[in-house]
Length: 479
Image (cartoon, rainbow, N blue to C red; front, side, top):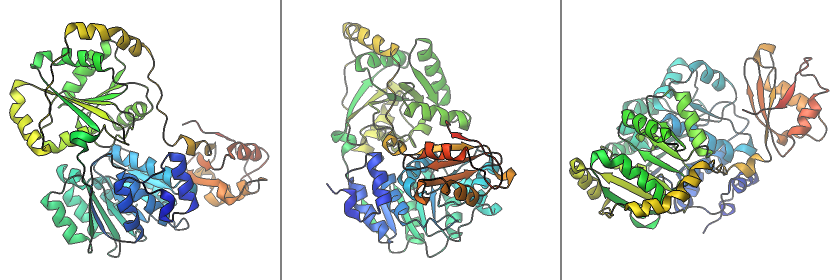
């Protein structure tokens, strides 16, 4: 396997990758990273969970000019959840280069996003509608943009964003590098690539993992009225560490969630009818292992990357075959084997036939667990239910050990600028420019990342300092 130090990456990027636990490149990373560094336009077809985000995130962060204040890279994605996930991923890859990544998406205050974009911003990741809104209102400048990335282009097509994407493409510099990533390659996406990319290299990562390699499949025929009981029996027998149960509608999600919650299952739900802040909080808590079973519509099939997810349940079959592929893509990630369990009712046989034809194999049908089997597994399952799910070890933990976000009770209202904070912090003995990370100045407060394990040194040092003649309180930020 190729190691990341073979790509001639800078020490800051290699240090971040090591802390994140990235040691050997996946197949898509092996092909994409050198091509991006070589400034090629790319069309990449790769399944979910293949390390795609890092494949473009690493070279993009590597090539970023920290001194430039305006965004140099724009990433378009189909969902808010995916925007937040990519923002976090790139922030950690670029942490030691002090890169600022801003996520913009709908149902979040426009004004707050505009304020963030006024500050030094290196990378913007967002949904097409909100990105276009910022462009039209003049709160997002693309004058210095040199790389445009279309991530999950097929999903943006399915969600009706294509016209908006094309409008954004026409507003970007013609000299840009353009990277297009898609799990599938419909005709309209090929046409888009032909129209807007310049002699793109094509990369297709062949994988049969959905069939055999990393995903074990099981199909259960069941009557509608027996589905909940079957799910409970299988959860008991399978005892998944963490799983997602997919339903077709938000009403179905709510009904199943309320039913399982009433029976004491550590569960929560995710669907499009929830407020955005609630959706993001549920995702964050699920990633952190605060509950084990997530009941969700297909809104969750994109934007959740959890390496220790052991099972997915297709409680309802999805309406289209691609959604089935994306659901299954939640397991079998990062080299770990997962299990995909699918329910089919007598009314869904035609839909099942279409899915099996699309994925190229028949799902193996299994016998339902008998009562004695369920009863035998129940004691161990109930013991596990009573235990708090083990908190997920975030892959960024090692990186974060050297970084402390500090809070200061002064911001724009006190006419404080980044240069004011930097100047004072550098006057503290033992602090160098390389120890100061991202500075996020808000109206009343400021957040600063202090690198290299020197957070407490800065907090202690600021106790005897003033910033622009003002006494500012500094403490560790806990949010």
